[in-house]
Amino acid sequence: MKNDIHPDYREVVFHDLSCDFKFITRSTIQTRDKITHEGQEYPLVKIEVSAESHPFFTGKHKIVDTAGRVEKFRQKFGKVGSKTEVAAG
Image (cartoon, rainbow, N blue to C red; front, side, top):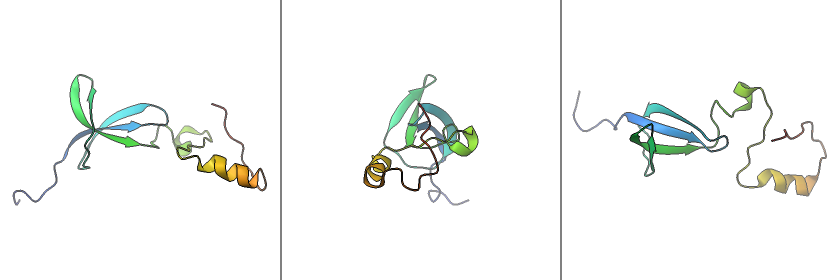
């Protein structure tokens, strides 16, 4: 194996911002953020959706909207053609 051509493969903390869930896995992703988790410092990757918050895995329909796009759409079009309802919580 050649030296200095492979990315740094290390443990990284992924933080699901929608449900405040954190998990550690190995990755080559580059990040500037760091976090202390379980007494050790790890690189931090912030994500919007993980298996902990995705409707396919949770069985709950939940709209994750951090930029206000869903609300803007609802203000513009109302409930015309809407077949789903927003989950409480």
